[in-house]
Image 1: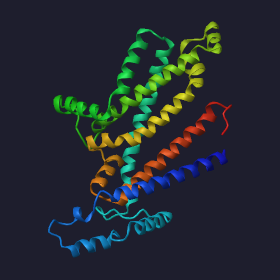
Image 2 (image 1 turned 30 degrees about the vertical axis):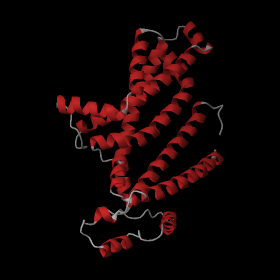
Image 3 (image 1 turned 135 degrees about the vertical axis):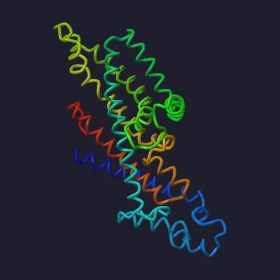
Image 4 (image 1 turned 180 degrees about the vertical axis):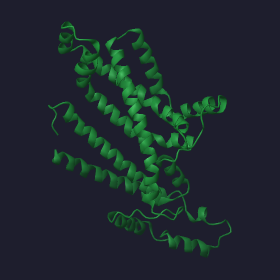
Length: 304
């Protein structure tokens, strides 16, 4: 197990380094931050002083080498706009994104497992057909379109919910609802397929023949053996939620790492962009590692 963790950590470190190299050089193509942070009538001397202050007048390779050296000492640099350590700015925003992702995935996982299991137990029944139709529509709906429609209907039209912010519980409803729809649809489809296969197995037929009630058959006998593909798609959707929250957070003005990343790109706050991407990538790595470890816990036949 420890050997597996070391191998995954090394592979993730290589991927993270490649990501840092790509983002570092691509972010520099967005332009000179001095043109954004200084007034239009700023002199060339003022621009040079600004670049000198933030180390932007050195050759790109020199800037990259300095950044990697600082990164090895866990120094992510300072935010140009906020004059604070970039990692502090990112972690403050990441807490909001993490809360949003945990709440959404908890609701999604619970609802999808229940709906998918019940649909599989009565395959081709009315509930199964309704659940399949709703899940297919949800899996196909783009987040940005659903978010705009939700604002138009529930915030502007009906006036029931606020359009942005995090002040009260009501501010969280629309972002959670929009992020809920797509993963719910995908997970329901996977749960249904896995449960149909599990419910047709010999041990389930034996349990039915012995008169075991439906609930233990679904949620005790069949569900445990159907969870491996379900865990895989849950992990994929959780990772996609961290990445996909960029659009939803921007539309709803949610102060998460997605919105921070978009703002930092537009403001050419390079250190914040890099810190946000690294924190998100590390979170996805940890999530995938936990999913791999969960495989062996659910199925003792699996050994890393």
